[in-house]
Image 1 (cartoon, rainbow over the protein chains, first blue to last red):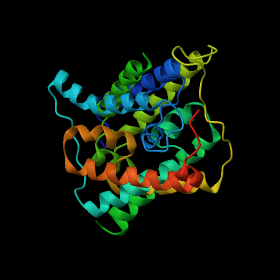
Image 2: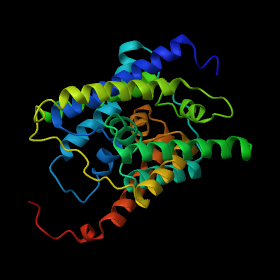
Image 3: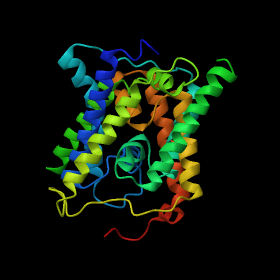
Image 4: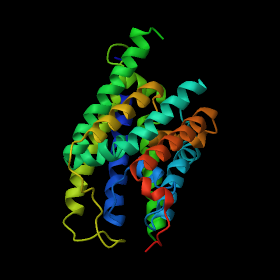
Length: 146
Length: 146
C-alpha cells in the first residue's frame, strides 16, 4: 500500500481522472450525452432505436486507439495484467455486460457522470457495485485463498 | 462533425484509463482488495474524474443546448428499483472477478491479448441478453423506424 501511494502513482492516477472528466464534459458540451461506456457499447447491438450508431462507433474506436497513441507518443508500453482463465473471463464478462445494462450504467455512466450530477440512482448503483466488487475480491483472494 | 468530436472524446477517455492505470485489471483488483494488497491510488482517479465532471457540467448546463446536437439527453428515470440494484450488484461481482469494467476492457482490445477479446465477447453476450429481457417487443421489431 505504501508503494502504491507513491507521489508518482498519485499524480498519474489524478491526471488520468482529470482526462476522463474532461472527456465526459466535452461529450456533454458537444453532443449532449452522458459518457457511459456500457450504454455506448450495448447500443452498438441491435435493435437500433436512434441514428447515433456512427458516433458510438467513433467513441469506441477512440477508446481502442488511445493505448496505441499513448505508446506511440511516449514509447512506454501499457501495462495490462489480466487472468487468462477462459471460464473466469466468460463469467466475469457476462456479469459485467448483463449487470451494466440491467443497472442502466457502469463505472463511467453511474460512477463518474451520474455521481457528478448527484443522481440518486447513480449514487446507489455506484455504492452497490463498489460493495459487491470489494466483497468479491475478498471472497476470491482471502476466503477462498486463491 | 459530431463523429470527429466523439472520436476525440473517446481518445481522451481512453488516455485517462491508460494514464491512471484503470486499464490494468491487476491494479483494479488491488484497488478493491481492502483487506490485502490495497492500492488506493484509483480513488484519486475517481475523485478527480467526478470533480472535473461536476464542475464542467455546471458550466455546460448554462447553455440551452449542446454545440453539435439539438438537446441534452439526460436519463429521466429516478426510481431505485430492484433492477437497478440487482444489475449493479451483478456488475460489481463481474468487475471483482476479473478487474475489467466496460471502458478498460474495450480499450484493452488494442493490446492484441486474448483475454480482453474473450471478456468483451462475453460482455456483449450479457448485454444482448439483458436488452432482450428489457424490451421483448423489440425482438420482433417490425415497426418502421422514424
